[in-house]
Amino acid sequence: MLVDEAKRAEYFSDHPSDVTLDMVDMARIPRHISCIMDGNGRWATSRGLARTEGHKAGIVSLREIITACVRLGVDVLSAYAFSTENWNRPKHEVNVLMHLFAKTFIDELPLLKRENVRVVFLGDISALPERTRQVFEYGLTECSEHTGMVLALAVNYGGRAELVRAARELAQEAAAGTLDPDRIDEDTVASHLYTAGLPDPELVIRTSGELRVSNYLLWQIAYAEFYITDTYWPDFDRWELIRAILAFQGRNRRFGGLNTAS
Ligand code: IPE
Ligand code: IPE
Ligand code: MG
Image (tube, rainbow, N blue to C red):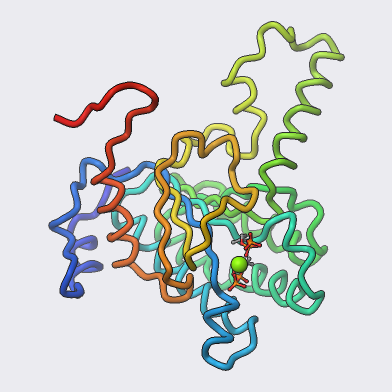
C-alpha cells in the first residue's frame, strides 16, 4: 500500500519515551492487522461510568487505529465489533451498540473518504436492526469506489456461523451440480468466507488481557501471530499499535517448518 511518508512521520512524531517510529521495519509491516476490541465495559466501570460510555470511548480508539494503519501502509485492518454471542447482553447495551455503529459509520464517512478506505463487513448484517442495516448499506455504497486500505468490520460475526454458512453454500453448489466435491480445496473454502479475497491476518491484537479467541476468524487465524495486552481498548492508541507491531517483528514465524532466523 502506497504511503505518504511525510504524513506518516507527522502522525507518529510525538512519541513516548520507550518507542519511536524508527524502531519499526517498514518493509515488514503486517499486511493484515486484526483487533479484538475488548475491555470497553471494564474501562468504563473502572471510572464509575456506564458500560456504554466505554463503547463510545472505544470508537475514538478505532478512529485512531484506522488512521495509524493507513499511515503505516497496512493493506487490511479488521476489527471485531459485535459477535454472534453478544446478542446475549442486556437489551439496552445491544441497542446502544447498534445505534452507535450506525452513527459512527455516518460520522466517520469523511475520514473514510479522505483516506480512501474501503469498508467490508464480516458477519450477517442482514440480521441487524433495520436502521443499522440501512445505514451500513448506504455507507458501503458511499465507500465502494475507494481503493486504499480495507477496513473489515466484524459485526454479528461468529467464526462457527461463518463456517456453517460456507458449508451450506458448498453443499448447495454440489447439489446443483456446479461444484465437484472432489475439487473442494482450502482455496474453495476460503472463497466462501466473509473474508474472501482478503489476505489472512498476520497479527491479531486482543486488548484487555483475555487469553481466548471468542469465536473470531477461526479459519483465517491458522497462522496469525497473537499479541495480547492488558490495556483496555479505549486506551489503545497509535503507540500501543506500534508496540504490537514491534512484538510481531520480533517473532520467528515458522509455519510448521524450521527456524528461519539468520
Ligand atoms: C468489547 O468490550 C466491545 C464489545 C464486545 C461490543 P466489552 O463490552 O466486551 O468490554 P468488557 O470485556 O466487558 O470489559
Ligand atoms: C469479543 O469480546 C467480541 C468483541 C470484541 C466484539 P467479548 O467480550 O464478547 O468476549 P468474551 O465474552 O469475553 O469471550
Ligand atoms: Mg469483553
